[in-house]
Amino acid sequence: MQARLTIDKDFTLGKIDERIYGSFIEHLGRAVYTGIFEPGHDTADEQGFRRDIMDLIRRLNIPIIRYPGGNFVSGYRWTDGIGPRESRPKRLDYAWASLEPNQFGIDEFADWCKKAGTTAMVAVNLGTGTPQQAADMVEYCNFAGGTYWSDLRIQNGHKDPHNFRVWCLGNEMDGPWQTGAKTADEYGRAANEAAKMMKWVDPTIELVACGSSGMDLPTYPEWDRKVLQHTYDNVDFISMHRYYGYNGSVEDYLASYADLDAFLAAGIAAADYVKAYKRSKKVMKISLDEWNAWYGTHGPKPEEAWTVAPPIHEQTYNVMDALCVGGLLTTILNRSDRVRMGCIAQLVNCLAILMTEPGKGAYAQTTYYPFLHASLYGRGEALRAMLKAPKMETRHGAVDSVASAVTFDEEKGELTVFALNLADEAAQLTVNARSFENLSPIEHIVLDGELFACNTFDTPEAVLPRSVATAACEKGVATVTLPARSWNVLRYTI
Ligand code: AHR
Image 1 (cartoon, rainbow, N blue to C red):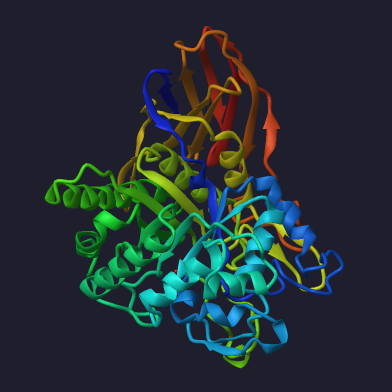
Image 2: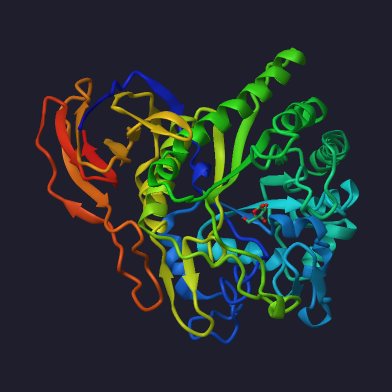
């Protein structure tokens, strides 16, 4: 199979916001307890943060992590998680039928973020919570001192404000599964009032309104339009969530990248409609703050309901899932002019790229690797390259059998081509980047193999990316072999 990718350095989508390489830690299953926080673990530091998982996270260079939910946040009283640990209440977490001990809260998360070399995207409760409680939380976290909430933070051992920049106005409020779910008008009104009050407390924050939590609900895509009619002037992002599952067809699954593109296009169109309606000059940004592969996992086992940190959504990802994730990353990059924030959901143990065992070790799932590659090498500018590849029939329509994205990091003098070959045969990809003088290959990374192969605690390195021989590059043109069903990273120096 032949494919062709034509790249010109002048055809740029603009600078990538590094926050597209965000992730997500929810109070869900073992994400927090025995995930990132396990006092008594061999590698735990003085605050109980596991150093083994932190090391793996640091390697990813994740700029932002969403917390504390997710569905969890819609019934969460943030004040339960502050102050002396022994007096924090245990609560029923309706979202995940679990017991929340509140031994890890917003102050611990702030400290953890500093140690992990990342920043927080904090979600407030707009399910059972009020705009006042949301504004109080901003005051607690971001106000310097001299007020009730800021002084309480200082009393709790944090003299300096946390200065969290990004705040989500609730989570998936369109979903009937959500604690305190709302209609678009109910949510839009509440979110707008919360946004006003939160920005009065700290005008420097950026706010994310809840958009559609997928395409399946009957409210999609009217939800986005209605919510933005209420909130447009006071928010900076509209969120979008999308997960993909394997249903027996490899082609359909790997073509998820095309479906994500259509989903984002619709979200952007809804936002631009409201922009026109309001005669606004402001361009609404998209926060794709939950995306991933997710299928075949369930809530807690009945006998583990209402316990602390029961295993939930502990999906073992295989090679095919990693390919799907790679494809989704190409879409995010190709839409990075509007997608300015994104979170792979999630980071540890639940639908996660990293797994831990209580009292034992940690390992990286197959999906860790495409995310690592994009986060490390997909910085700088995204280029609008022209791809010509044979089409493939899938349930998402006729899609290109190669998915690709191109980034140019001028500072480092590096050009990177990310390419997913969906087809069951190798592809000869001609990369034509003649506008770059003196292009020479650094490396060609491939992730492929038996589609159902996984990493596990016993075989943590069963699936690893490999470096293959680079193809010669002459006057900016190279013909590269993309193995059948493979994720490829072609790195060039200029
Ligand atoms: O990431 C798991 C869950 O998926 C989140 O809690 C929720 O927002 C979404 O439905």
